[in-house]
Structures are given as structure tokens and as C-alpha cells.
Amino acid sequence: MALHRRAETDLETVWRKRIERWLDAGMGSCALAHPELAAVMQETLLKFAGARYELLAWCIMPNHVHVLIDPVESLAKIVQSWKSYTGRWALRKNAELGLGVPGGKLWMRDYWDRYIRDQQHFGQVVEYIHQNPVKAGLCSRPEDWHWSSARDRGAPAPQQKPETTL
Image (tube, rainbow, N blue to C red; front, side, top):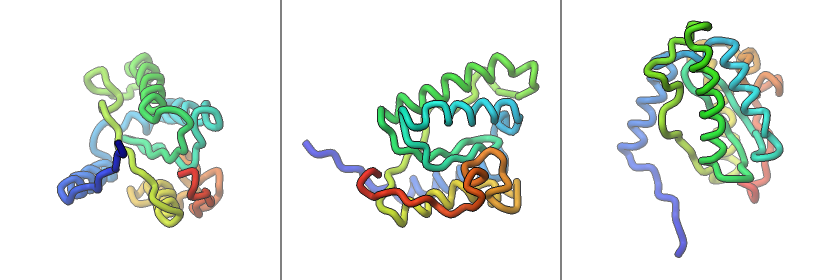
């Protein structure tokens, strides 16, 4: 039995774009704006890069995270490990750092994933990730945002990734 990924419906597209606008406007918990939590999130992403996944692009925003990986193991397990570790850390430090994590949960239950169709789409996604803090008005250039792979690259240009591994 062959499984096929279904296309996003118009309603799903509208909903996703609405949530993106809310996130860009800084709605929701902005605990990741705290440098200590952002650093823990960054360390968590980098820890298993090269082992569990290839880390291609990432950006930690005050209220969400964008990550582009080429997974070696189950995406669900990877995301769960990130959320579990950083969530426990944030809850332990919530009062001390004044993170304002509401209701004892840092993360939403689910996550959004997307299949990268080709090299052009790959470049668009990397650009979107790196431009996110600029679009949200947090910095002027992607490489100025401390919590992003654009900073390491010094420019928002996407790295080339062979289509066969995406």
C-alpha cells in the first residue's frame, strides 16, 4: 500500500497563515525571548545534529521555533525529545527567571511539518526561516538575530542540499 501526502486544503492554508501572523505579532507565551531559555533551545538543537538529524536551518523566535532538518530517525521522536528537555528546563526555571510559562506547558501538543519538494522549495524554506525575525521586526538583517543559523552563515543564502536526501 503506497501512502501519499495530501495537499494542504484552502482552509488549512488560511488557518496556518493566520497563526503565522499571530506568532509574528508576538502573541502567546514569549518565554523563548529569555536568553537563558533560548540558549538551552539552541544547545538542544545542536546537541544531536549530525547524529539523529542533519540540522539545515533554524531560528528561535520569542514564541516559537523554526527548524529544518534531514532526519535520520523518527521526526516525532526528535521533536518530542526537544520539547521534553526544554519544557522540563523551562518549568524548573519558570519562577526564577520570570519566564511566564502558562499552565505548566511550554509547548503546544503537536507541531507542523512540511515535506520539502525540491531544491527551489528548500531554498524558499531556508529563506523563510532566516527572514522570520526580520519579518517580525526583531532585527534588520537575518544574520543579526543571535538565535538563528543565519548568524553562523553570515548571510541568509540557503546552503545547497541534494534533492535525493530531502
